[in-house]
Length: 354
Length: 204
Figure 1: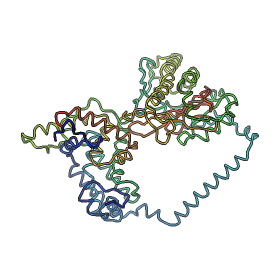
Figure 2 (figure 1 turned 180 degrees about the horizontal axis):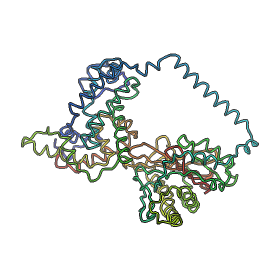
Figure 3 (figure 1 turned 180 degrees about the vertical axis):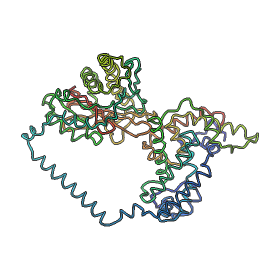
Figure 4 (figure 1 turned 90 degrees about the vertical axis):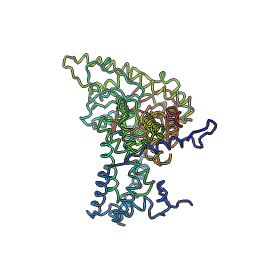
């Protein structure tokens, strides 16, 4: 088994010496009892005589019904699209329902059980929660690997009322969002200038905004929006803490840890991907800058009709690629419109009007 | 000879040479149709590798037993809906991985990066007392132990990729089972091998 120094392995993903050692050592097997249980279960399943599911579904009527359903669905979609295409400017006013209403609906769908304030959703940062927030019972960040976005509270009506009415293009943006973010509100605020600007090169625009993301992100507004949503999630375990003190600590946590980390991590991943010459357009197959890491991270860009969406993706050990946050820029790459942080239930924390 | 079936047989030579009627997919089909012996064959073919994968990831024999049963009960329950869209091994390892993830989520919310556990136990379990005690093999046995400990010390993703490959899966199959790009799998294995070689330089 001795390998000579000048005798390279044929396949760099194989090492016969190591394999031989492994085969010699890894001889554990399930016990005879476990084997017997499984084999008995296999026989018992047959004895039950249940009709296999594939046979139940093999009826031609089922196939016809499924085909008809698909056909009708497609037809309906086309009809609706044609109808919508026929709509012109006057329809804009009708459809200009505030994005906040949608946001409210979405956020109210968050189960009450999600009451824990999850400390940070930002990979790469594990702030010392105790130091910062004191007696607040904040769920500590699970790990860099599987950081969860903060849970969204039901949006208070007062907050909803304060939110600006989104123009119709915000609604359009939303309908074009990726499936995972379909329910995530993407609010747009600003002038109509971006309506006329179509992105010529999404990747070039991505580079323009990302190279100096700090300049494009209004941290104060991000902090404020995050605070509004995270504050109700703070669970107070120390009754001696006054509401004012809790307010102050949550705000400090968001301001000092969460919001800066959101931007810093974006910048870091962007920088690493540029340095390692990764493709920013490969949303189907994201290209992490470090393929050997336990947690893979990547950015990818999606061109929208009037916006540029940059997805911040992580692939932890257990779940495959997931969108941790989506940064929505104006198509001309001049301003950051929104940050959308999808939650597991399909709702989202969102930061708008940046 | 190129295999015509979409399903790749395992790397067990006797099975490969016995033709398509004994392919994994064919055995599943026969089992679905009521042939209990087909399941026995299928189970015998894959039981050890699935078990070792589970054990290497969960590091606890009792838990591996439990998860192993869950995996195969899933196979039994899925006999009617099973479609040979991928290799059986890919499917069954994906099931195993899914059970591991479920377990760890129940336990701690997420699959943990192990720290502070005692690798000695798992080494004993993996070796299972079968290594030869003869003196001339003592060095080899120690190398085996060290290898298994070194595997234990790998980061979870690298350990998983290494073990799955050693249990006979191709890079593509590993990628499919773990929902990871084959290039990523390859990188993980390369890093794993580099670390193992460093640890076992005097054994190689």
